[in-house]
Amino acid sequence: MPGSQDQRSRSSRAATIHGCAQSGDLLGLQRRLQENPSLLNARNAVMSQTPLHVAAGYNNTSIVKFLLESQGPEKVELEAKNMYGETPLHMAAKNGSSESARLLLAHGAFLEAKANNGMTPLHLAVWHALRAGDCITVSTLLEYNADCSVKDNEGMTPINHLSESAGNEKLQKLLTQHIEEQKKRKALESCSEAKTKMAEFEAAISNIVGLHELKMQLRRWAKGMLFDEKRRALGLSIAARKPPHMAFLGNPGTGKTMVARVLGKLLHMVGILPTDKVTEVQRTDLVGEFVGHTGPKTRRKIQEAEGGILFVDEAYRLIPMQKADDKDYGLEALEEIMSVMDSGKVVVIFAGYCEPMKRVIASNEGFCRRVTKFFYFSDFSTTELAQILHLKMNNQDQVSVLYGFKLHPSCTVDAVAELIGRETMEKQRKEMNGGLIDPLLVNARENLDLRLDFDCTDADSLVTISMEDLEAGLRLLSQ
Image 1 (cartoon, one colour):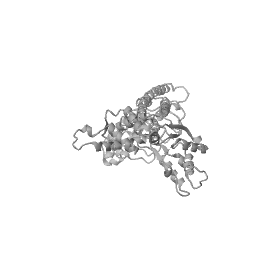
Image 2 (cartoon, one colour):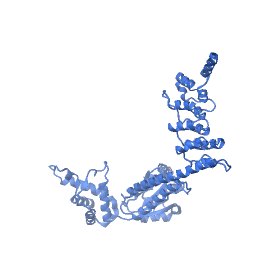
Image 3 (cartoon, helix red, strand yellow):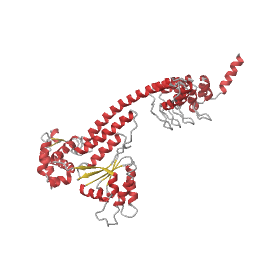
Image 4 (cartoon, helix red, strand yellow):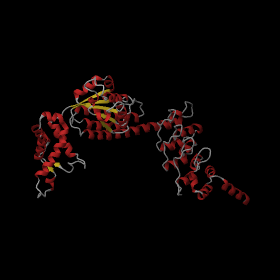
């Protein structure tokens, strides 16, 4: 007997750490780690598996637990992959090692990790259940809400792997029940997310004055795209929605750039565009002075805008008034932009005055085919300009020269609208629109400084812009 114990001891010392993990020799494994802590994540020669892979595959739970709780200089690699791209959780799942799977999940193992063939642990657990008639590991993964809709590289979900033959009823029922529960849960989550996103969207467009028809169109898009999210959450297979290329037509200061930025946030929010960036360009950003310069220059800007919106301001300047002018390269820039509009990599918005833009639209057949949405930005009324002024004063950020200032209660929307109508010409309002407000407010603040006395100690008076200040600001602007 003593000789037999000594033989087992020598055998244990001779075994590798992977051998100890396979046989369940916890003492032998601990001894090897004490001698060489770097063996914790060592790979074996053939399968490139760590001791955790091996222990999980053989369901040696005492070793799995020890490795997961190891307090050595190194931490066990929970998501290490073997030659087939399988993590320790994959190994536990495909061998029906339910207890090991539960330990791994409790320590944060990634439930949806994919092997080289695209299979998740749930795919492999289903395979094991089909062979062994044991659904315990499948049940364990479902307890942790394994996603039943994930597809492997062949486009198969876990339930797709069930054959029509008898004997699969229990497994079929288990998966089907979980799929229905998961759909309901995803639908509820999607509904809650949709309401939050719609509220964010409404908050964004509330800062746009006027433009009621355009805002209604934006609402239609927003709701449509959010409902598409809900449809997919319910497992419905629907066509992908492509955002259209657009033309914004209107005078300067009518909100075209602001709406483009809101649109960028909207399309990113619902997953249509990967980013919310809006790259603003004009002719000078796209057109070169010499032959061969325009193409590369335009392509650089397009590349910069990829994943978001390319906003081409004063787009009519890309097409010369005289078609015989062969020294103008604007048309080349326009053709470069149109060449990528079918790729889906960027959304293009062309903006400019109504009449010149109509010339661009009429002169290029490809433009008409690709640009499918046209929005007209009307000139602002005096009331809308007053509303813009109030919005700006109520939403100043810290870098603004108006930050910390406020309007006197007498500066109501109606009072400001009447003042703007009295102190400005229609031609001036039409040329500037919303662009009238920023210089007006800067002038008004300067007038406040001018009329204040250095003996003033009333803090409120030091930051309150009055009707007198606004009137002075408008007169300076008109001069």
